[in-house]
Image 1 (cartoon, rainbow, N blue to C red):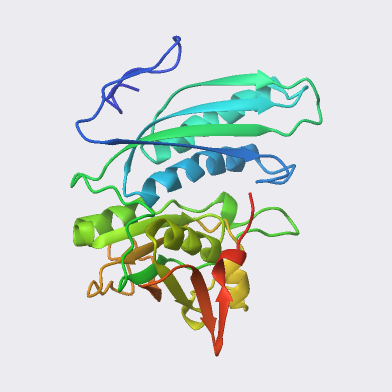
Image 2 (cartoon, rainbow, N blue to C red; image 1 turned 30 degrees about the vertical axis):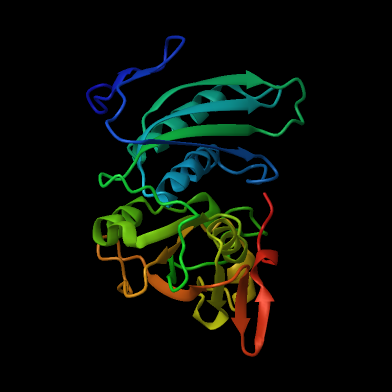
Length: 290
């Protein structure tokens, strides 16, 4: 591991990992996936591991950070096969390194009940953008333009339990390009994990602004015919961002090809609404509860 990740002085195997800290700010996040809540029973373990890691990596992307290292824990149902536990650990390590975030330690425990849900927790540590700019939810200003990456809705196939919620790519490269290009004019950002409406409302509340989204502008994934589904489905893990007026983003991110769509604006006031024809609907009510 030190050859590939020289900042890792000691990885798994001792009571603690040892890493060399970076010169700038460090960002820490933790998230979990729970069977029957975040993934269906029978989901391939490699995809469970991928989602567990990707959720925390997406949080780093939402603040413009670069992954640095990670820790993971797992609570396994009683009777969980040793071969499956080994495969799960291999997959967690693989996906962490896929996003250049070496897994430096962790722990596994067995629950007393075979009916207990398989639960994985990943703590990811990142370093701030080289400019030092850390993008939070609290920086949006009246007049800002509101954009979203990619497309929304239909992340979970209710028939199979599969879908993009297991295979999404955290928007690390898009976030880095945004900060490289626009710097501190990127005022606020969040990853859309709980639905566009609910997460936009979080930015509005944290920033003390009113956010107005246009229903007709919300980009939808193939097969999503209703903008309400796109606004409230959740688990999209796209970036929602507020940029300074006059920062007209291109329709496509030049480094990845991901769509960049203007979906609204920030105004003086409070709350978050989605404007549909002559109606203004409460956006905070549109989302998915983890």
